[in-house]
Length: 152
Image (cartoon, rainbow, N blue to C red; front, top):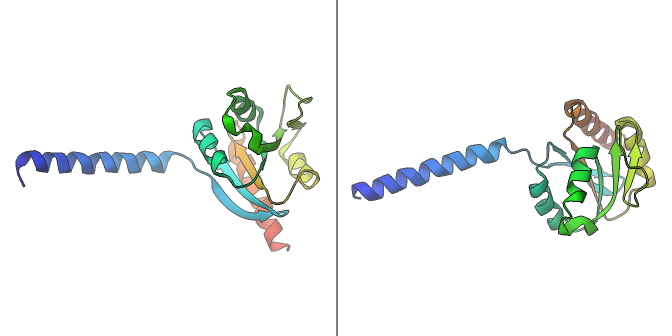
C-alpha cells in the first residue's frame, strides 16, 4: 500500500467515525410496543425532515400526540406524507382548536386519557416532545405506556 492509499484509508475511517458519532447524537424514534391495538413510539426532539422520512415508511396511518410547535411546523411545511396523519393531539397551550386534523388538549395527562376515543387499528401512535417540559412529558408518556403493558 502506497502513502496515498494509506492516507485515503485513514480519511475514510475518520469520516466513518464522525458519521457514527453524529448519528449517535441524533435522537431517534423509540418503539414502546402496542397500546390500544396501535404500534406506539416516542421521539424526543424529533428532526422534522427525518420525521417526514420516517412517517413515509409507516405501513399504517398515524395518530400523533405532540406540542404545537412541532406539529404545526410539520403540517405547515406541507410534507407529502400529511395524508398518513389521521389526527394530531396537541397538548399544552395551543392557538388552533378548530382544525379537522388537530385537537387541542390542555395537558399531557388529559391528552393520554383522550387517546382511547381516537385510536384505530391498524395504526401508529407517535408521541413527540420538544418543548421546555419535554423531559417530563417523554418520561410521563413512556411510563404510562409501560404500565399499561403490566396491567394487561
